[in-house]
Image (tube, rainbow, N blue to C red):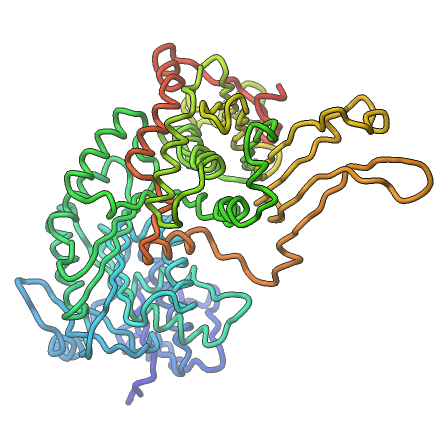
Length: 588
């Protein structure tokens, strides 16, 4: 029986064929465009291949994902291709030092049924100008966030058409295996879905997998060789996203520096938090990284800093005359930074050996304060902004442990602590920080952040002083705080900018009301807000590093928190328990 070039061949294991053949097993249903052998015996005679017909590459990927799921969960592997097919495949592969590489790849996007692979190479004209490698490609972060963000950038035109995407892991996967894993998490923009399928196929066609094994030096050498096979002869830039456990970071980074950097362009390395667990481990990590890379190559990423709220801080301050004159101790009474996750979050997995201080406070909270309180930079250049941020961090007073509230959520059963957490791991943090400089002297920056609380909330509240000699005090009543002017920058729920003012209620008499002038984003802007990973990855591509922590910022932040960490370590201070789904330690 002849098979047209448009057929999709999906191998099935013996157990899979047995399930199809068994009358008692659940039937497999196929769309009308799929042609399956009329007799089950024909499936077996074809070496266990389900033959589908049509142009639906997405259906082919679904069948591959079904098999891949079985392979990963049952431990069975796909059947080997026939000898004739294998011989035909080998004719199109070039070999170098016992490692198989493809010829150059074409620049025009291909559908996934024609996807280039290092197992089926095609020639190229100029080659890729940018390669992006995700180290730890089969992990949850890579599958759920990094690859979807890269596709979103590719779909929107922010990545070159000839980009090469490499997944690096220790698993025995083919290019098609990785593509099937990635495809299940890819979506197109809600506000414009033109050519979604074609773009998705083109992106997957430029995605490759490399098994780095357990020797990172050998693995990075292989990665370098595979990148060179598709790169441009004149210019080639590389981004490496190290989505690896903290204990593996230095070995992976060192091997990358020695064996995988390009000499035909720039190299940028993205590092996930935590950036050490305490000042000593962070210093050792920084020293190792700076012995291998220049500071401007390192991008320490915190996805929470990619939120629109954070980027809007400097825009509000430095592009609106109404705010900047008020931005000091002369007018601001206090600043509140609130970040809480509700009990629906899978909080246990975020604290494997470290708590909310290292995960949230050290990076996100202190960076937010730095952007909020810094002096105007001389330009929007990343280094100019980071210069101002580090000045703020160095001016923040070291935390006194007696002024800090630490808590840990517990389950609904009284006294039963979540078994996923260490007894000394805090999931709640509240404190007041003070910046000892002329602009902010005496203004408390009140932090409240926690996991497993009653609501998911992220906002900054800037409360202004009371009006001196207030003429309308009698109309306000005893609670003068209710009449305090307030600027609220909210990210969750419902991103908004709110200004709280006092005004007269219409009608006879004089009755005051505290009202909010609001800019609700979902009402004002009819567009989808990009994921924070998209924002930060685009910044890396563009070389904009203002939202990424520099080494001196890192050290200054640890200096603020070190007294609390030392107290916890020295006296084995245990956080107080609070109810999961409650208000946190302050309410107990």
